[in-house]
Amino acid sequence: MKVTFEKYNPLWTASFASLETELKTYLSDFDVRIEHIGSTSVKNLSAKPIIDIMIGVKDPEDLDKIPDLLMAEDYIYYENYNADMPYRRFFVRLHQSPGSLGLPVHITSIADVTEELHNHTWRMAHIHVIPLASEHWIRHIAFRDYLRNHSVVREEYQQLKEKLSKQEWIDGNDYNAAKDSFLKREEQKAIQWYNDL
Image (cartoon, rainbow, N blue to C red):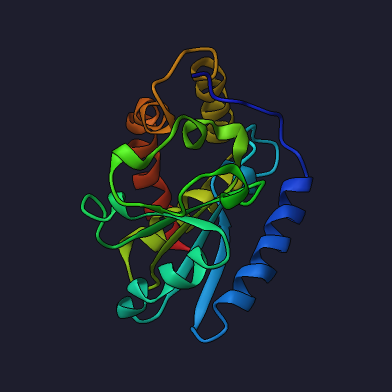
């Protein structure tokens, strides 16, 4: 597969705002913080047109209370990632109801991931639920803010993404792995910068 890569679109901010309102309604019983992260949250940075959303929970025990609520609202829960990232619960929001497409809302193993779910053009948003008091929360916020404030790094990331968008990938995870060395290097700088603010 090739990763769809689009120039920055200010409508991504509006899409996030709409999803944020929706998620706050579904999760009204929880004390959460919702942030727009990833490339779609950084002005002048091209991206896959999928909104990355991070939901922070104050109580880590709430992680396992959220999946049933979001699955009931047509968010697809990728439980199969929990073993590798036990601190995170990951969901995908499609442009259409998974039920209308004959797709599952609960992914427990890689065998559950259909060809359609690998197709990023079907995806509206990726939702990452993690504890607020975690290094992962800080890492994502720091890197987003670092890119927003450092045009040279943002441009280097832009060029890397342009290069990778021309290649064929097994799936989104394969594409993400190709960005890993850049991300690890710049995230460390971002965290230091963020902590010094």
